[in-house]
Image 1 (tube, rainbow, N blue to C red):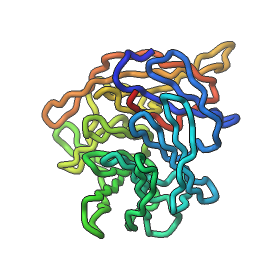
Image 2 (tube, helix red, strand yellow):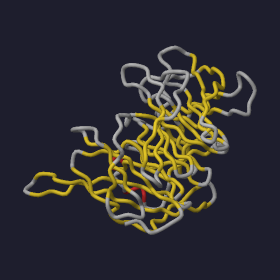
Image 3 (cartoon, rainbow, N blue to C red):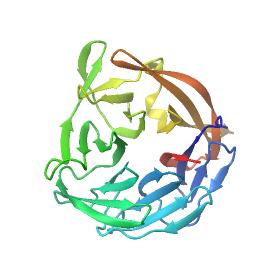
Image 4 (cartoon, one colour):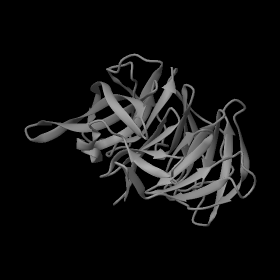
Length: 302
């Protein structure tokens, strides 16, 4: 099991057969079943000990909000958004304790932004922005919401004035070894933030972090170059460290029967313009049926 810390890592998984969910607590050796509800394919964010599922319909627009209290295990339906959203294109981020939902409203150029206050449980329309419509991978950094789709980044800053809140950045540049190269065949696998640093796992390119001052991607170094990066399924912050999760098959009679959830906790330190990672702990976080796969991975306060 995970070493006991102030934070919990919560991989949210599903089975391809019946869409049942699973919840794994870092301090528990066994999986806990999800409360029954039909809203797994959603944008998801954690605030304190609660997980918020901002439901976006796969075909028909949806404005649902579901709230999971990880202390009690209860799932409740919250107030609906005013803007129905489609697909998993809605970006979410937490700024000053409030949840920002950006995009996912359809195929037009306008991107509606709504804000949910967990204390008052109310929604407020924060305005309309213009930009790309697919904003699937997102995280909050320095009171801004960073949204990355392949190699392009949109940054939403609620403190800026009208028409200046959404900034679009194109960054295919990879700074490595004193030279600048270009990322190739980039597809975002997962994202997270550790100590205000935005980490992304690009399929076939590995775990990288975004240098905001120089607008370049930099590779996380420290033995990671030899990893099979396409096997990384989730990233999360865990007590100031980077948690990297993999799935691997356990075979019996040449057939996969279960999948193991393997976790590595990586401490981070800077060396000049580089960030180096050292694996402090690694082990099996749990096992799941072979048909399971990750939807989200979150860290919550216990």
